[in-house]
Length: 180
Image (cartoon, rainbow, N blue to C red):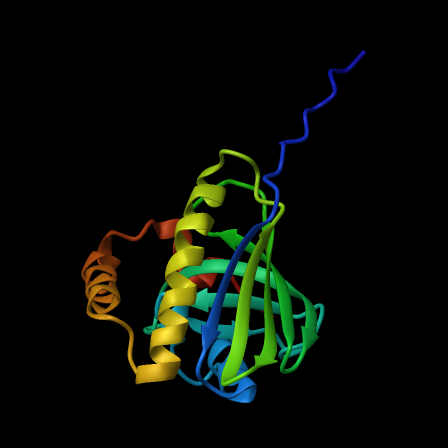
């Protein structure tokens, strides 16, 4: 009798929430723009498949130069300006995809932004990176929306990422991760 494959345990959802002193439509525009890097998403540029920002469309988060792709996924839910959910897979890791959901809600004086990580395999590299990234994403989004720029520490991370670009694994080259 063939041995059943174990299904990896998934971590209960991780939730990161922040209040941003900005209009909900401005925050939505920031997290879904495709015409410039999204600073809160590690200065990645969102590239969408032919379906655009709609369920079923593929997405890729690429370096500003477009040479490398760090994340790929498929849009599951898109309800502007309140909810975007997509699958999420790091191109440099062999872990299965998880899901991320961005919820926006008008709140007094601005927008409540919530990032939820779902179905990340417990103890995986993806789960560890996602939890670390969730904290940085929410803080950076708040800073960008309220001051126009990320913190000095985040700008230093961007510089280090740019300098380390030549060491990016070949498997992360964008030609390996088409969205069409």
